[in-house]
Image (spheres, rainbow, N blue to C red):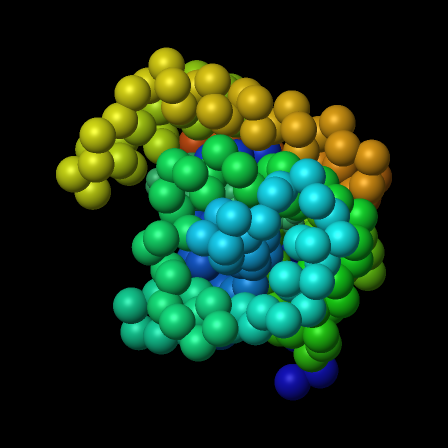
Length: 224
Ligand code: CDP
Ligand code: CDP
């Protein structure tokens, strides 16, 4: 079809980007691309191989020798790092606490953006991250910027952890989220910022379905 569009969803940690992006993609039968998973996969490899996270040149070399695949399966998206399934391990506390230090390097971002643009080369895509509307897909027909209070976002991650049977500390989560938001927002290259033409949705007191419906109504409007 030629009315397929690109949808960019950006915002801070745990605002609900990936949850609603998946729903929107499923509804439209679009592909979903989780760009954060790509930065997480590189961070996992760097920590496994003891590459210093402030060594941009070594990280860039590492990335050039790394394949990262996002596979859509029945159980959701799987992330493959050099062919190995790392879907779960890229969500570890260690990776979460380190990923923003990897993602702030210009050379790393340049390569990641090129890979992401290649993945989205056809329309019919929902992509979430921090710089999708501003850098990766500046021509996206629909741009969404999701926000929520840090208390609510920490609470969501906390409940998610408990549901999965992981140990979880609400205050720790709040600190981690605030720290990551700060690094992501203050970096020199492609910081977390709302694109001028993005629609901001505060999800603090909205359900997942309400957020998905709001985005879908923007999408249907564009398709008319
Ligand atoms: O899911 P969560 O919000 O915890 O994070 P994520 O989307 O998996 O992204 C992890 C980290 O990758 C972010 O905190 C950013 O440092 C980085 N990232 C980025 O710089 N640009 C993107 N387009 C996506 C993620
Ligand atoms: O991708 P991002 O880091 O922005 O957030 P996420 O991984 O989708 O996590 C958001 C968490 O908040 C999930 O556990 C959702 O079930 C929950 N949630 C939401 O996404 N949206 C709401 N409006 C309410 C709750």
